[in-house]
Length: 414
Image (cartoon, rainbow, N blue to C red; front, side, top):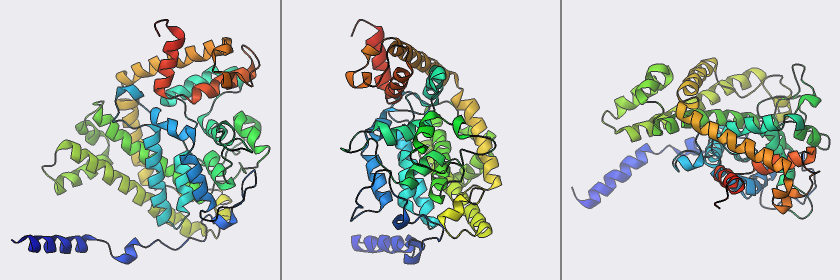
């Protein structure tokens, strides 16, 4: 066949496979979507951008934040030095933002706001994943505790210092509300404001985020995008690390077995790395499709006319189906047993605990060892304000920086 004929044939096949124009068009804005022109504004008034909506502007500020850059050195399960192919908080946040934007667009929501929330949701995580959070919370028991969600709010409203007239990023009300309440109301079932982390208490005293209502629809999308991303990408990382096998996964998680069978049918001789990538890709699609389908059912039932109706609904508008929740529970049980509690992961977790605990105890007792900027605002060895400064300092570390700082402070060979 001549080269021209092959090119023409390829172009014809590509055109046939390409979705029609209507399929690629954005759906019309849903009546219950968050409307940028109706934003409740920022704590510190600023002139509006002439080229970006408030939520585009929020997204851009998050991307340029120092805390966002540091996410590249913070991990969720593995320690950073164990390999550069495993996901970090940065790559995870990018994946959450992509899924949130895609789902929000399909539902007619503001995809810029959903993306901003996906990018911001992990900014308060300390080094070494949930292990780091547990250690800092224990260390801060006598000093009003530590919570990664509250720390995210603290980063966004206080610890980032880039602007001449205010601390923090001065994000819009809707973005801050979505960060704090993405998993639902914080004041309910008997919970009171004084039961919440101190960072949240202090902020809502000057900027009410309505903690007794559900968040807006875009925040609900971002929360579920987080579930989709970490559940399915932990499959990829766990297989890559050899913590479990594809056979074990198929035997114990029926949804994975069903999707993998479809991959095998379509590509019977596909090498395993490509097969795993195709499995994870399809699983993400299955979860996203379920989220859109079930959410549309909820929308038809609740019939919200505005984002305020979503907040006042008394139940989540965006959610997975009961069947998908059952599949999710089975996958999480598998990952808990085979991955999160694997003996190799336990060893890394044990080491991380010692590093952070010893750093905290030393710096609290000898705050003069802190960098000069971090000594400011303390109240001496063992003081409450010093403890919070030490906690903020450690929470902002990457995995490698925490390891190096521990070595610098506890050994004489460097």
